[in-house]
Structure formats: C-alpha cells, structure tokens
Length: 352
Image (cartoon, rainbow, N blue to C red):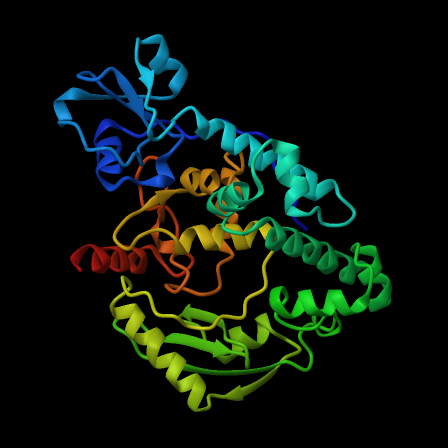
C-alpha cells in the first residue's frame, strides 16, 4: 500500500558546475533545488527558465528564492521561480486528499481544494508525479486492493475493503495496474502465462519474459529458476515469435541504452513505485539524477529512501533506466545487476 513517508531533509544544493549544466539544459528536474541569480539584471530564475542564458561569469547560484531575495535579487516574471514551492505544496495537499478520501475525488474538487484551475492542475500534478490525479487515485486504490487480497479470505470482501463500490470496477483497474485479475493476484499469478528466453549481450545473458500484455521481467544473469521463484504460480512457456521480437529489441537496447523503443510492459507496482518508474523513464539519455532528484520530481521530496527502494524494485533492466540514478555525492551507488554493468550502460549513453 502507498504510505506517506516521514519528512526528511531536502537534498543538498548541487555544486556550481552541476547548477550551470542544469541551467544550460533547462532541466525541469532541478527546479526547486536552487535558483540562478543574474548580476546584470538583478533577477533570479528557475533552472528551466526559457529566457536567453546569461554569461557564466554573470550568474551565481543560491539555494532558494528566500536567500536570493535577501541578497537583493527579484523573481523572474517569465519562469516565476517562487511558484515552485507553491506547486509542490499544492500537489502534496491533493495527494493527502486523495489518500484520505473513500472514493477518488474529481479533478475539479482537487483543483478547487488547492486553488488552481482544473486544466492547469492536471498538467502540474502529472508533471510532478508522473500520473494524472485520476491515474494516481486508481493506482492507490489498487495498492489497497493488493493489501486487502493478502488479508481477506474472499476476493469479494477484499474488493469492498479496498474501497471499490463494485467488483467490475476493481477488475477493470486491476487489468491495468496489477497486470492480472484480483483472484489471479491472490493466487500468486495462477492462470497467467509467461513466455521467456535468454539472449546474449555484451554485458552477459539477459532474461526476457513477457505475458500476453507485455514485458514483465528483464534481468541480467537470471534464468528459469529465478523466473519461477519470482512467479511461482504462473505457467512458464518457451518464447514464441512475439517474445523473440521483444527479446531482440531488448538485446539491441542493451547495446544502445540511449534508444527509446516503444515496448509493451506488464509490471505491477504501487502508486509510489509507478511514479518513480515514470520519473526514471523521463531522465534524458546520458544524464543522471540522484535519489533526491527523483523524490522531488514526483512531488515527494522527503521520500528519498523510499525512492531508492522503488528504484531497486525495478524489474525491467535498461528499459526502465534505474542505471541513470546515482548517489547525491555523484558516486555511482548500487545496481541490482552489478555496478560494472551500470558504469558500462552510462558510458554507452555518453558516447552516443
């Protein structure tokens, strides 16, 4: 189940070189981490400001708007850097309302609650969390269904305990989020057919497994035993023509991780995990983010540790690029399939 995380200190401000790189890239993921102050104009901006870049020697970096104002700078009227904190607070307030509600609030209700126009708040919420408010609410309710399925004796009881008004809605949501029906989920995947094979790559054998909906596992150095342990009640079958095509695409992606193939996926995850994975897929090839950056990008800046756990729970190596996440100090950090593979994938992206 999605659980609100305790507040943690905000991630530290990046060093000046990283700040300047973010300004040049107009990196929205860095908005809220610092502001750029321009000596010649006396204004401060978000890293993503669309205005013409000043000369490097005319720009200094400060941790937040309050410090910039204290230093005598004024807010840019184009990018409105003071709105970043307000936007994050609005999204956090909307998430709290969604979590507390017995039935998902309508977009108009959420927008009115935080003082934004509905169409604007829809874009804002999706930009910070990776999901629309409606998709976030559906995923949250499905999280609750997962927990209820593990506790309730009957599937119908679990459906109502999770807050659904009717089984039909639960089954419709589950098809898109759990990747299988609630009864199949409770039975450990029984009735789900997974086709699989391993393919060779320059970074070692890659396991590629898929349901009829899409890829459910991509991993290095695993085989049938590991797949069976992960999906103990599923029916495992050898790859068919469709799986072979997916495996070939995955193998090509390992060699060129900067590519962005449109491959179908079938992975279950909590609302928080899904938001983290969406943020990972939004990282441009060749760039890196810290766990703090990812937490901030999904509107949960205090959930740095939980963001790291969600990255570790990624079951689709390379396709969901958790290799692009590093520690706050710039060190590579861990990687489920080995740090050397992580280093190689990042090097390949930089060379493109």
